[in-house]
Image 1 (cartoon, rainbow, N blue to C red):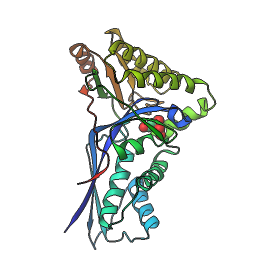
Image 2 (tube, protein in one colour; image 1 turned 60 degrees about the horizontal axis):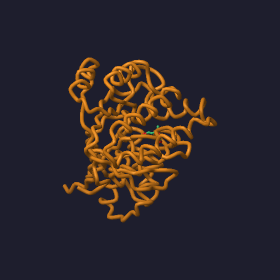
Image 3 (cartoon, rainbow, N blue to C red; image 1 turned 90 degrees about the vertical axis):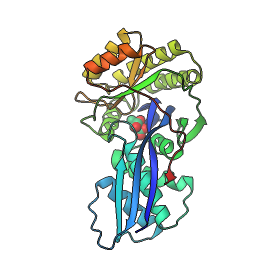
Image 4 (tube, rainbow, N blue to C red; image 1 turned 135 degrees about the horizontal axis):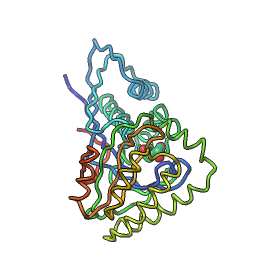
Amino acid sequence: MKEFQSKSPGKLILSGEHAVVYGMPAISMAINKFVTATVVQDTNAKPNFDKLIQFTVNNFADRFDVSIDSLNIKIDSTIPIGCGMGSSAAVALSIIGALAEYYEIKLTEDEYFDLAQMSEKIQHGRPSGVDAYTCLHGGSVYFQKGKIKPCQINSKLPMFIVNTGKPSVSTGECVAEVGRKFSDSKIWYEFAEVTNALVNILATDDVSELKKIIRANHRLLIEIGVVPHKIQEFIAAIEQTNAAAKICGAGSIVGDNAGVVLIVSDEMAVIKNICAHYNFDLVPIQIETRGLRVV
Ligand code: MEV
């Protein structure tokens, strides 16, 4: 039986999470972790999909007037779910890509983006679009209100990530809670300043300025209440070593886990010890230049 497969990378937000929901800029990059969707004809299929998959499939069927009754859809993922790495956008995009292949429908990039955004809305209410855009196109981008500028990142910058575990609330709940307290706040302009400072530094080798910006970003994220206490403690320990760190994504308004944390440090061994103390695995950031593709 012929299989139709499509694969989307995940993403990381280096700066501007939450602020991007209020029209401020964000810098994001696709990473070398992937969701692959496989569509195969199966007349006995009685699929029982989760909400995101079911919506994405039904929405595609409605938009293009096709029947999905005899299809089986399989999802394989190396992106941890709900940890700020764009898993929902990548799931939606990979399914849309595989269905488009199966039905031989040529979608424009705007159509891919719109359909993925509709799925993201099911998952988390008012998505800015930065996740869907980054996973669809790959590479690194400066994103603001759906408009994009290129963003160069010096691959030699000593940037690492750790996954601190899946937050106990969803991105949607986190965005909603931040909105209740800060939707009219001027703090978003401070986030924008930090993001605009970062875009100029990422192409350079100025690690000390990079650390300053990441620390400022971390303080703003604490102020909007999305950095759990345990993660604040962890980042304080990182900062003691002259390094810098911040959450990378929605973070969390309760519990201990905050998904992915970005670390900038030229003292890998010291950082590794702190991460080991918290049981976190330290991995270098690896950018993925390609976005959604057929496999
Ligand atoms: C989620 O990856 C990032 C947030 O800024 C939400 C969004 O942009 O839709 C928290």
